[in-house]
Image 1 (cartoon, rainbow, N blue to C red):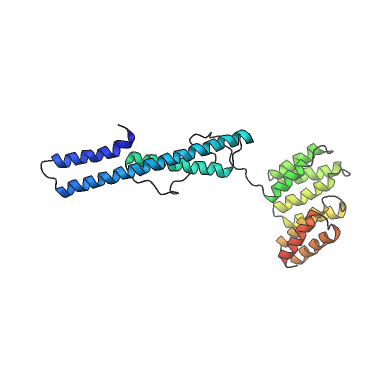
Image 2 (cartoon, rainbow, N blue to C red):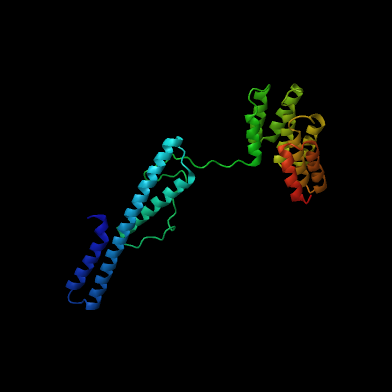
Length: 274
């Protein structure tokens, strides 16, 4: 029996049983069943229209997905993927409702497939949106990208990997050893900065203050000096030493006015009440 007629046939059987059932049926009962039958026919007709409309939308959207995959090498925008999932879930719900002879769920009542889950007609390997990096992770990634070709790159990169893994004790030991072996390296100030940054990320603020201050004492003209001061100010602020934090931020504006850190220092001063 075709799926679309299953619910209606159940009503036909109901009518037959009432009309032929030992004269027990009343006219009201027969009329009620007939009325229900008409309502079901109208419901199925409406569902058929909705299903066909959704199918057309899905066909159009799937073609758009195919075009995007062809032009971008497989990368599909998250909003397109989400819309496709919603339409597919809605179509499935309508088809199930039609098969059962029930009213369809309201739009939005069906949870769409999550990113990365299979959607009819679309490969299940569609990429999920990348996780957004924290500022600390972004700074690590930027540091790693700038290492290429520098002396001592391998040792330094290994230490950064330990920081990324949250192994601060091992990382700082590696970085101290790097500074001891390469005191004149262009990366010496970077190593000292990341010792302080590692402690800062672990919320060990007193240690962070000590190590970041060391950057200023030993590598005042290095390219990590402004960043060290900015993090030093954050460490002071985190421990409630607002006055010291403001003094450090002012120092950035005075000594490194044309840096990216200077702009951040201005914003932080406004937040701290100048």
